[in-house]
Image 1 (cartoon, one colour):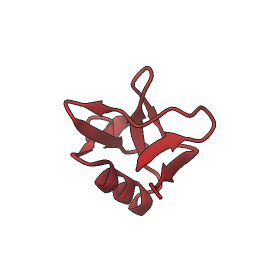
Image 2 (cartoon, rainbow, N blue to C red; image 1 turned 90 degrees about the vertical axis):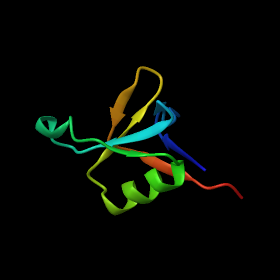
Image 3 (tube, rainbow, N blue to C red; image 1 turned 30 degrees about the vertical axis):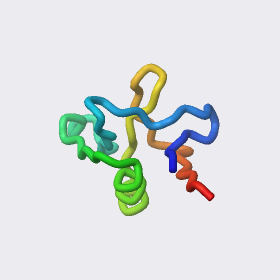
Image 4 (cartoon, rainbow, N blue to C red; image 1 turned 60 degrees about the vertical axis):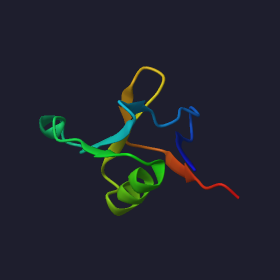
Length: 72
């Protein structure tokens, strides 16, 4: 499984082996939620569609056009 931005093809990145999701509000950027697996991060994003996830390159938080690709 992987989490990608449809338009650019960027993939979710880890920091210290953790996927980091962030709320949409700039004032809450310090309140990230971290996950040890891509599956848990994907489930969280599905349940919280206004949140974003850190993606490479450039370690930017992406909020739109997020696609969860499952392995066949």
